[in-house]
Length: 180
Image (cartoon, rainbow, N blue to C red):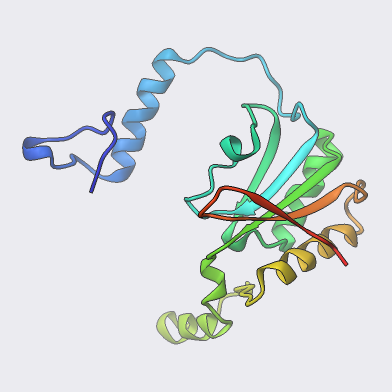
């Protein structure tokens, strides 16, 4: 396992503390050099990006974005759920965004799950999750479904600039999905 130079290590290179301890220490180092950029919560580019939570997606780097450019909403699969609609509604109605970019990716873990996952959880913990897994087999079709959910939401003011893409985790390129 490789560790970044900023990660505290003990004897023989062993990582000290928990991952959260490392994150808190990194934040202390960040805050020591931090200066308020003077921004408000409104994204400069007026765009909200909905994407998968996959750790391989560095959205700001992949899209050439800077701090303050966009709202970023991430979840498993980048699926447009009720909570994503909630966040997009707040983004548009309270914070002025007008465009929505949806990004799924190749090799997504949701392609290997099924709704059976919920049943397995129910058997394990004694309670069925209220949420759907939103698993899919065809990433292109799931992007189309997500675009349709955004475009037909009665809560969103701006649905004319909604575009969907698949990010290739091997090449870093986006492939746009035709909504039809």
